[in-house]
Image (tube, rainbow, N blue to C red; front, side):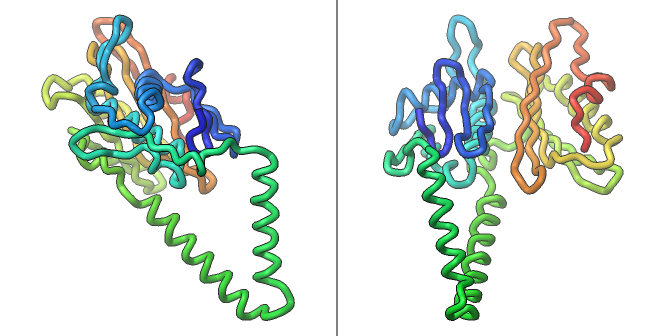
Length: 266
């Protein structure tokens, strides 16, 4: 299924960006949400339906569905995140304009490259060089403003589903990192708060990190600890998902050795 620049393999649960080649093996929440949106394309799907459980899986919490939508939009990128629409008070809809969702091919990228080269030649050719240079600068400034607006815009769903707890960590370099904890209920979250504090302590030993926001949640049975990291690396938006499982009665998801192995510092 073509979604913007990405191809969704519904059988394998893999989302592939055909421009960059980046692949994402979707976790259970993201896979279930995207699959239901694809099956009901151009139809509004209620949040409760997107998070419904089955014989093998328990229901997803509202915050898990919200986080899955947020992560899917992040992967699709600013040019295509609007394809997953929020229908206030009703749910979500995957809207695909078929004119804009054709598979990306070498011929397509070749035409884009040729068009780009033609624009550059026109802007900086010998004739009217000064005028064309000013037009080029204006276009560049407008592009920067548009991209900046995309990047700083806050996701609608995150606004309506705020974290029940948040922690700000100052790294050795002075960099600020935000840890946001999500749970269906505001009570009985002692373990999640302890894990957030433990993770904050480990991050505090870092000089720098590419991550800006870290989203934390526990499964309903408190046996799976979900960590989603979002930040910037080499000027590109990056996302990383971690799932830690601990079936012991006294749970200890995070250790100093684990933190070193997963390389969350710069």
